[in-house]
Length: 197
Length: 197
DNA sequence: TATTCGACTTACCATTTGGTAAGCGATAAC
DNA sequence: GTTATCGCTTACCAAATGGTAAGTCGAATA
Image (cartoon, rainbow over all chains, first blue to last red; front, side, top):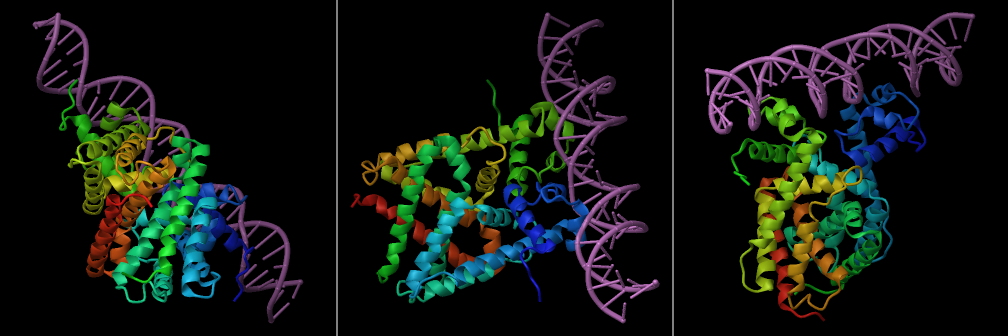
C-alpha cells in the first residue's frame, strides 16, 4: 500500500482541506480548489467521484491527523502526556487554525448531513488517556468527558474567534488575550496534579 | 418609529435567522427562506436589497437580542446577575441553539468578509458586569475577558456539538453529559463568590 | 374620484454550481 | 509494436443561484 504525501490524490486532499476549512463545505466550490492547483475541476471528480466524496476523504484525513497527534504526544506519565497534548493543541489551533475550522464547520453541518463521526476515535483516545490520570481514574465517564470537552471547547472557540477578536480589539490587544488564555489553560491543566475532592 | 414583531419585515428577519443558523450564509438560499414563508424570493430583495443586506439585518437583530438578554437578566448583585446570565445562556443554547449557531457561523466566516462586529456591544456589556464582581474587580482586562470567553466557549461549543454527540453516543448518554456539563458550569460559577488569590 | 405608495409578483437574465461523456497523451505491460 | 491503464482535459448540460426590470393590486391619501 503506497501512500506518498506528494501523490496527486494527497495534494488534492491537502488543498481541499484548506479551502473547506476557510469557507466551509457549501461555499467551497470545486473550482475554487482546483484553481490553486493548476488543474481542472474534473481532476477532483476523476479521483473522488463527487464533491461529497472529496469531503469524506478530507474528513478522514482530519480524523487520522487528530488521532495521530494524540498517539504521538511526548511524555511518560498520562498526566504529562495529556498536559502536553492540550498545550500543543492550543498552540496549533492558534498558529494554524485549519483543522479547528474544519472541525467546527463539521459540527455545525452535522444536523443536516453527516452519518459518520470522524472525531469519535479521537475523543475516545483522549478519554482513555485522561482516564489513566489519578485525577480522573475514579470519575464517571460523563464528568471526565465534560472536563475534556470544556477544554476543547474553550481552546477551539478562542481559536476560531481570532480574526474577530483582532478586528474588534486590535492585533496588539489580542496578544495580551493570547497570553492570558495560555495562562488560564495551564492553570486548568495544573488540576491534573491534584486528586479529586 | 413602529417596530411590531409581526410586521412583514420582522417575519422575514426571523425566518432568515433560522435558516442562516441552520445552514450558514452560503448554503442558505433566498428561496429556501421564502419557501417557508409562502412568498417569492423577490419579497426579500424588495425589503433588503440583496442577500448580504438581509444578513446584515439578521446579525443586527442577533446583536440586539444578545445585548437585551444581558441587560434584562434578573438579580441584585453583579455576582447574582452574572451567574444567572451564564446559566440562562447555557440552557437556551441547548434548548434553542439558533443564536449560538448563528454566532459561531459568523465567527468562522469572519476571515473572509465581516467588517462589523455585532457581538462587540454584548461582550463589552458582559465585561462591564463581570468587572463589578469582587472576584474580578481587581483583575486585568485580559484575565477577565479570558475567563468570560472560556465560559462562552465551552457553553457554545457544547451546544453546537449536540447533534454530533447524540449521534456518536446516543440520545440517552447525552442526557448524562448534559447533567455533567451543567454541574461543571455551576462549579466554575461558584468561583465568583471567592476573592482572587 | 384620482393618485400615490407599499408590498409584493411575474418574467427574465447571467453566472456558477456539481456532474456526465468522451477523448487524449504519456507511461507501463505484454 | 500493440494494448491497457493512469491522470487527466475539453465539451457539454441541467439545475440553482443572486439580481434587475417592470408590472399588479389593494389600501391610504389628496
